Image (cartoon, rainbow, N blue to C red; front, top):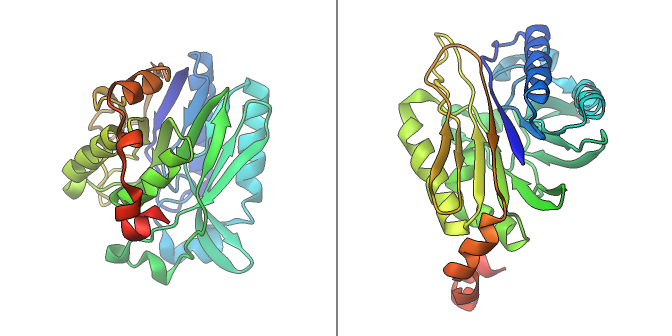
Length: 264
């Protein structure tokens, strides 16, 4: 399956500009043969937390119409990164996954809120996993800070996910953590990880380095450290997952009865 990776320069609070840029690159990815297209975290507003009252997408209506329309028109699956949404008066960091028929197949609001930047003062945490199927490939998704919680990734893998999509706005000062954690999540769960980070000009400090990682931990593609948008279409062979899980049968060798709460 060809994966279109869109490493966007997200404009802080510039909603119209961000939708226009996202559409331009979704169309470009489809023209280059992408079958599934992935966006970064909070691509509609950036981390304009204090402006969500005026900027967040009410009930996600605009984003859902935007993604479903493009997916159906172009015949592509879209893992819609995430957007700021307002639902019943509360704000969420929400992902919509749309299949090539233009149907929403999964919706996920970020479960782990990042205390370091006081996300919990502005956002409500989600309460459920994100699992879906794309052309017969079982998949899951997490958002940014979620990658620091290996038990959350493992829960998705135990429910069958062979690829995990990770939209993010991961800052430059901790970019080494980003790389190491993503590789660890791929290796320990023997799955593909498709992680799409944003970029930004100063004063925000995000420098991309999106990644696709194979189930053996090999890095198949890395986005540039650039201030410009970047699009890459990468061919991913998901059949490798079954081969590697047979070679090193960690799922068969687990001892969940000893793991306490993780086994629940």
